[in-house]
Structure formats: structure tokens, C-alpha cells
Image 1: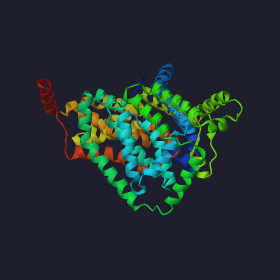
Image 2: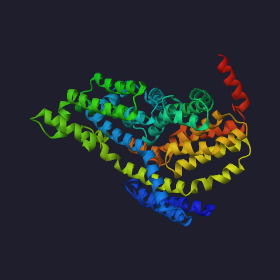
Image 3: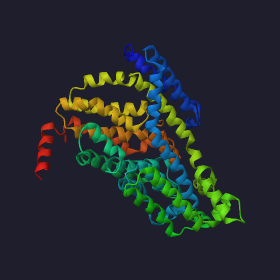
Image 4: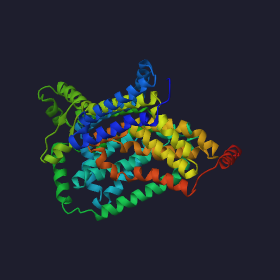
Length: 486
């Protein structure tokens, strides 16, 4: 590049993106259907023109775009497999059975509290918020629907619990990535995160507990009975169906990578559909005289396309509809568009130019942590990927934290409290777009109720300004010596 961008040049694509996204919300009912994707592409084109003015060659820009899209490819592949898994788990009766028995045992007033706890436990065990939300989360949302609760509220509870595990599980990729960027070890990072995470989760659980006891469930009994009757009249709700989610969770705990694990869960769901739901298999396939042929057609259809199973209750019919891999294509389109925008912005140094003044003026520990939080949220919004929101600020701030005598775990904790937690609150971020599609709830609808994700970055800033559990390099060195002695 011949010169560095001015602050106005760096901000211009983001200003245009914000204006276009605002117009889309006002003018379009379904912004995920293409409007937001085009907004990102237009903004990327503006960023490309600015990059060209700065002297950057198109070959370099294209190389960065391809590299950025490549970094998102694992998420895209996981998203496709989640679509196919949702399809086979639906026709096999796994998700309907989870809803049916969940309605039997869950106290409505404790449901929101339970949704957070169950999602957290499964996510800690698997290390994946995505798998948790796509399986247990979908079932919990169905139970919430039957109880007559707001989908956005229930989704907020599910996401709060799922992202607790995404943050604290040693199996989580972000939990391993953050300490690597900051220069500390995994278990020091997890132990240090507990200081801000436990209070954040405690506040979250108290909020959902109070909300549940104040909620009006006057019509819930009728809805629950109707839903259970509709499910029982359509599916064979054999308890053996729970072997499928148990098997998937076990596979993930055994550290099988996400792609083969999800594919195994998909195939297992298909096998159980053939064994336990022969009437569903023939209904989906539209073939009654050849069960082998019907099995093949129905399994393929559930994995790639639309499946709608008719029940005695229209609400349950809507609930038990899936779209397979095809239903994920709009989200993948959004992710690709966001990666193009983020790639151009990064290749031209526009993101770095915006964050430079922030780093320069961060003097106190509180302002430094607050700046880190703001930078992570900024990258979640502009680069549209939680990994970039951890990696880039981690590289940017590592030496600054060291120069100020702060232990690397202070930085790694801040990266997780903000980078991991806020990714799911951005509609065009890979996380926000995915969870919105999987749960069928708009990101902006559930975001105000994802209390754990909102509280976590604020808790990190609060601890820094009040100098609570802020470890210095001298303390960190003493800790390392003690570990070596042990």
C-alpha cells in the first residue's frame, strides 16, 4: 500500500453498512432473505474502492477475501450438517420425544432456569454451543412453545446456557484459542475466567428464576395437553430414542471432531427413523409399497430439504417442520457476504486504523480492558466472526497488557468475556446468523434476553475498574514457580 487510510476512509464502509442495515429492518420483513447480504456486498465494494485508492492491488484484496472465507468454512460445513441432523432427528422422533417427556417433568415456573442449566451442562460436556443449541436447544424451544412462552425469551435462556459452556469448557475451540493468543495456558485461563463468569451466570439465573415465577401460565395446561396429544398421535415416543442424543454427546466428549460427530448423529437419527417411525418414513417419501425405497427417499429428503409432518395441532405441525441443508443456504450466503466485507476491511488495514486511537488512549487498567471489550465487539460486528474477534484483538493488545504489567490471563479472560460472548448478538455474525436460523428466532428478538452474553463483557469491565482479581505479571510469575515446585 502507498499510504495509510484516514479515519474517515476507514469508517465510511461501516457507516454505509449501518445505514443500509437500518433501511433493511424498516423496509423488509425477512432481512436474511437477501437484503442484509446485499448490504454487506455494497459496503465491501466501497471498502474495495478505498483499498484501491490506498494503492492496494486487486490480487492482494482477492487473496485476503479467499483466506477469510476459508477461515469461515468449518462453520459453514457445521451449519450444513446441523441442518441435516435436525431433519433426521425430527423424522426419527428424537426431538418430538424430548419435547414430550420434557413437558412431563419440567415445572413451568422453573422452565427458564432449567433451560439455562441444562444447556450449560450439555455445552460444558460437549464444548460446543452450536451442537447444544441445534439439539437440546431446539427441544427446549419446543417445550417453551407448548408452555405458551415467548420464543425470544426461551431462546435467550438457551443461548445464555449454551455460551456458558462455549466459554468454560476445555473442549471448546474459543476456550483454547483465547489463551493461545494472550500467552497463557488453558487451565489457568479457565480458572481465571471463573472470577467473572460465575457472578455473570449467577445474575442470569436469578433473572430467569424471577421471570419464571412472575410469568402467567394460565393457558399452559391446555397447550401442554394438546402438544403431547399431537406428538403421541404422530410419533412413536419410545424412550430408546434418547440413545441418539446420548450417543452424540458421548462421541463429542471423546473428542471426535465436530464434523464427523455431527454426521454420525445425523446417520444415527436416520437409522432410528427407519426402526421406530416406519409410518413417518412412508409419509415423507410418499411410497407405501417399497419400504427400502421409502427409507432412502425420506432420509435423503430430511437431510437436504423440506419436511412437514401433519399433526392434530397446527402449532405442533409448524414446530415439527424442518428444511435440512437447504434451509441453511440463506445463512451461508450471509456468512460469505460478511467474510467478503471483513476480508477487504482487514486487507486494506481499515479495521486496524479504527482501533489504533483506542489503544493509544487506554491508560488505566479499567480503560484498557474496556477498550479490549469494545474492540472485540467491533470485530464481531465488522469482521463478522468470533474467531477474528479473538485473534486480532489478542494480537493487538498482547504487548500493551505486558507493558502495563498485566498477566496474560487478564487479556485471555477479556477476549472470551467479549469476543466469544457478543458474537451471537450480531445478526450477520456467523454465530448470530446460525443460531437465529437454527432456532427460528431473529437475532434482534432474542438478543435482549441473552442476559449471560450481555452481562459478561460488563462484568469484565467492572472487575477491571474496581481492580478485582486483576493479576499482575509478578503474581503470575510466582504462580508459575509454585506450579513448578509442585
